[in-house]
Length: 270
Image 1 (cartoon, rainbow, N blue to C red):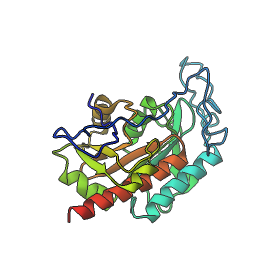
Image 2 (image 1 turned 30 degrees about the horizontal axis):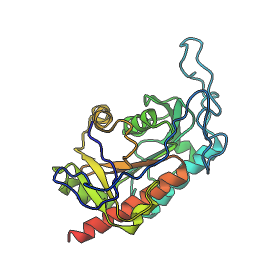
Image 3 (image 1 turned 90 degrees about the vertical axis):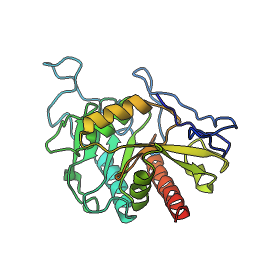
């Protein structure tokens, strides 16, 4: 597994990793069945484990399949619609591009349906899926659901994922795909990322070649990144950004910060 850690030095070696300096510590405590950690900005309905669906009697250990059991909480729908609308308004999810999701509990998350205008989404345009990406309510989930599922499986604290298609992310990811990463270094905006407290920091966003076989792409991301705590997101070449947060508010902040930083890098190359 290649790691894309952060460091307090702005010097970048030939491998693309920061050289010198000490890693900036970030407190990580995974959620477990025996205890959950509350997260600012989440209601009790949004916490992992809250509103846990009953197991299906025909499939022990699996979440049941009735619509009643998988009813979408209004708070989760409102949070997801707000995130999608916010990104659309900034030009990062135009037309039918992008997809967004929010975790419901340890077994399920809600995601935008496929092929919809992110500036005109309604609650009925969302559906519930399990952590394998299987739809649990009526509708066709985003084609990129497996990439969201990979993040939730590997990162127990994450409660929201955003995938945007900005011009900066699209152009830079195509231009730098051979290098395999884009470096974000020395910008004050880096301090908007959780755990970063100085601009004298270098962050590397991995870049993966795009692949129409999304399950295969998700498997590649999983093999390369897993649940690496030092990664804030990644890019798909000629496509866009994936990032996340331990709360929906944190995910929205990471989207705004990283998109701003990508624009700075793009302008610097002109």
